[in-house]
Length: 234
Length: 84
Image: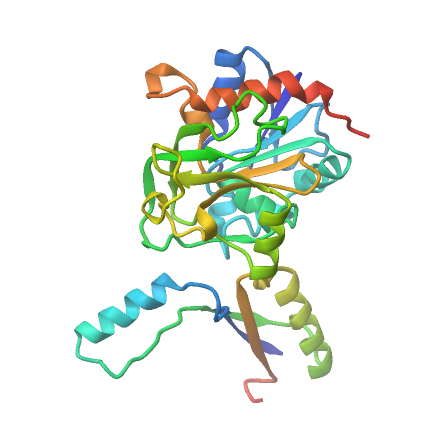
C-alpha cells in the first residue's frame, strides 16, 4: 500500500503527513509534485495542509488547476482514495470533488487549537478503525475553515450521511461552543457520495504520536493503510 | 478593453469581515451604517476589440475562476479606451 502526498508551492504539512506514513506507520510513501503528470501507482492521494499557491484569490482556487489535480480528479472518478486535509479540503471543494466551500472563520481569527470530533461514519476506508460515535481529539490550524453550503446541498449531505466529522465537546455533544470556526452544522469533515473522497479541516497528522499530545489521528492513517487495497479502483 | 469586476459574498453567506468593519465604523461615530459587505475588485486588461466578445469572455472567466458560485456573486463592466 502506497501513500502519495501532493506538494504544491506553499504546502506546509506534506512532511508532517510523510513522517506519519513513513516513520510512524511504516507504509510506503511518495511525494507528488504539483507538476507531476503521473500518480506513480499510489493507492491513496493526500492533499495536505498549507497555503497552496499562496491561497491567492481564494483558498485552493489556483491549486485546483495544477497539472496533478487533473490526475487526482480522474483517480477519484475511478474510485481511488483521495484525502484532503485542511488546505487539501479547500482544494477539493474548489475542484468540485466535494460540495460546498470553506470561508473565513466567524471569529476572523486564525485558530490553532485542539478540537474534539464526533465520528459519524465508521464504514469508510478512512475511519474503519474508529468506533461508532467515537470522539477524536485532533488539532486545527486555519483561518478559513468555516464550512458553508447552500441549504439544499446541506440537507442532501445530512440525508445521505456524508458528514463524517463534527466538532463536539469532550462528551461528544455537538454544541455551538465546540464549533471553532462557525461551520454550518458544526461540520469538520465530509465524504463524497461514493465514499472515496474525504475532506477535513483538522490535522490528524499532527496527533499521531504520543510525543505530540495525542494519537487519535493515527487511527485514520491506520484505517487507510489497512483498507486502501480493498478499495476497487477501475 | 478594460474589465472592472466586483466579487461579493452572497447575501446568505456570513461575512464576519463586514460585521467587524461595521463595528469599526460605528466606534468612529458612523452609526448610520446598517450593514457592511466586503468583497473584492479585479481589473483586467483585455486584448479584445469587441465589447460583446469581451463580455462573454469575462463572464466565463468569472464563472470558471474569479468567483466561486457557492459563496460569491459577481458583476462587471467592460470599458473601451477608458470610456464606457
